[in-house]
Image 1 (cartoon, helix red, strand yellow):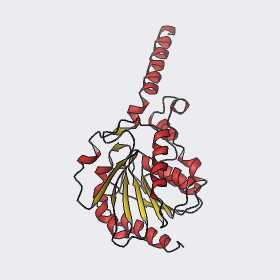
Image 2 (cartoon, helix red, strand yellow; image 1 turned 180 degrees about the horizontal axis):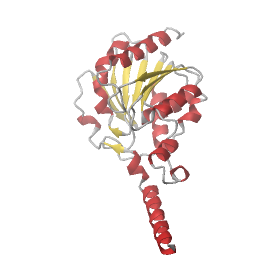
Image 3 (cartoon, helix red, strand yellow; image 1 turned 180 degrees about the vertical axis):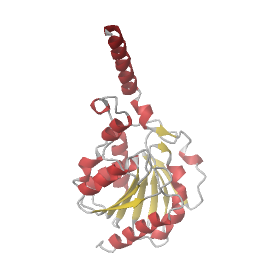
Length: 259
């Protein structure tokens, strides 16, 4: 019995060490395809200068800017299908890319992600309203920016309370919260956000529990949670006009409050 316990303990320590060492590979799944190789239309601007990396579409009569931060897998190019809907918002649209993604040599990590997002935001120098749209991992980045800068509105798709809490739910048998290096504590940043917030979450989300979206909605000062009964994590925007109608209403309502 003692030998069995010792063997189990050694195996447990081995698994904990393995997860701790390779946690970056379990969190981030970047597509390494070069930023410039995206099959974008000719009316998109590609920016890859001094760490500020994005695709930008300029609205003919822009009322402001919407910055989209994507999830932990793939790359910004994968989300350009959203542009066909976003064009109707009369905003310049930016699809932000992350360090370590799209052939970038920088290391992925919380510090780099947040610094890079702040650099992008500061580079805009826009006097017009700015909306932030964060998808999953991108929701934490968007919330961080909204806690530091003045924005017109914050839109969160399938957001988690913190990566620390999410990881603990995924690996309930491991003490993940004690050794995770990328906590991304969105719930703490949410408490200091003054902008109105729209939360979009699928009830059947199999990756980020719907309950996390519910919990976040109680932390923000001014938020609305919109639930989608038959949607999960990766199909929430597919064949879902209601989602984009909610986003459109949110933008139109809040852009009118700008000076």
